Length: 204
Image 1 (cartoon, helix red, strand yellow):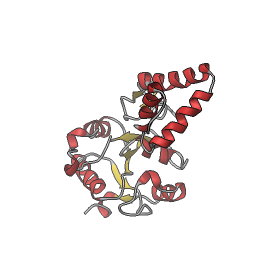
Image 2: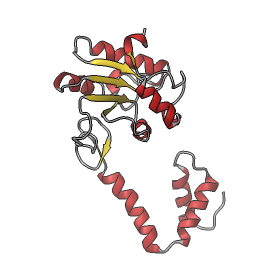
Image 3: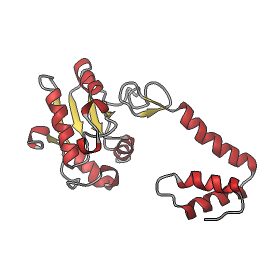
């Protein structure tokens, strides 16, 4: 794509690095910004920069947050004795959108996948085990994608939790095996949470 300005080209190249954004879409976005007043574009740029500079991860559950403790962990109206274990931030958002879950979360930051070079030490597993050991956790709900990697991760964590006085369940198979949690419709995801199963019936 040949453009009349190196500044325009650099902006298009930057937008094209975003997931799902091709060169043509990037060009449309950049040309749109060129039509806006300078203060609006500067505000847009500063908003993105400030988000990247100041956003942090909750020291307790590893969810994204504006403060050291996220709004979920600090909310006394949430059931702090119930933890939903998810792979990433997108899964937190998907579950929150169901409005059917009133507990807390724990974001692993991935799932065990030896082929991708991801092992247990690369994930937030030790902090989860510590939460169960030190907090009054009544139930741990695994809401991981229903695939081999997800099952492996559940099995590994379940072994780490042996001897802990905590009920361990997983979302029901309303989510098809091999499916992606973030792409499930809200009704299916909500029913999967409501009809969760003991892990012993799920991971063999």
